[in-house]
Image 1: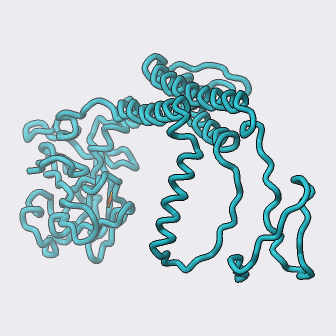
Image 2: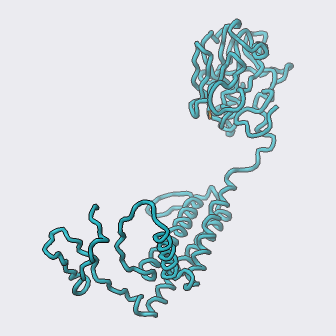
Image 3: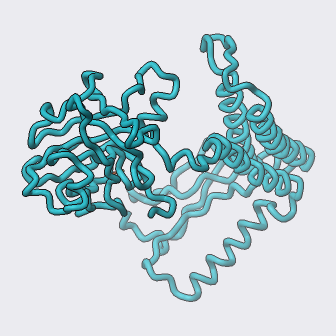
Length: 355
Ligand code: FES
């Protein structure tokens, strides 16, 4: 609005609120000014103000109780317990209780704050005049003064019951998030440092099984330029721990013409140009599934880490900090690809010391 209100005298308001008359002085676009202020009941009746104060505090207290209920539900309710709730139907009792209590805790803080503002804080409307963006010292001092006045009028210091219950409810609500840390599960200890290929030994090699066909793989089936995914023999999709296990065991097999393999140590871990790398990205663990056969680059779709499979899966782009671990493979007397041991280092995200 380009109209500078500072140059105008605000027109007088006449009559009661709701009958606000506009003093236009013959100007059809004159600033109509503010309607007459009408005090609220809590402004003129101290008992009404006290009642509103108790209502606000009650909401903050209910918020605190709901947060305690959230934590109690989390500890006491069995995660597998199912209950019938109309009209939702059968739902997890734990999820329902957590959602309900957290919802009530947050709602009561919001509702209490709104009720406080509407009934007890100052509701005098003031025109906000436009100023240059950079305020001078006088204006800044004025703002600080207004801030102090606002703080005084909000009653934050004076209405101790509201202040204390608000602080209590705000302090308790974050505890809901703290107890959820338990869902991060038990510490993995050494479990992440070994995979299902751990069962393989030079004396008892473990066959590689094609993840699509579920059949053992012969070296001659892997052609140059192809990308094949494999898992250890014995790991079946209907196993209870399949998802946890495949997240560590999944292999990515490529065949590169031996003369194109730059890393000779890597070539020795493979078999006639067939190289078996972990499919789990060393950044934060996404499964890698994109392979560019001309450049031998494997790309992680999550954050574009790129690994050169012809050069020991060295990281050539992206946030991953380590090459993909490589599994030593060979063939058995029937020509099937087998592993003779586990990866030499942990697979997946490199959040611990790696060798
Ligand atoms: S998980 Fe692969 S780049 Fe982030």
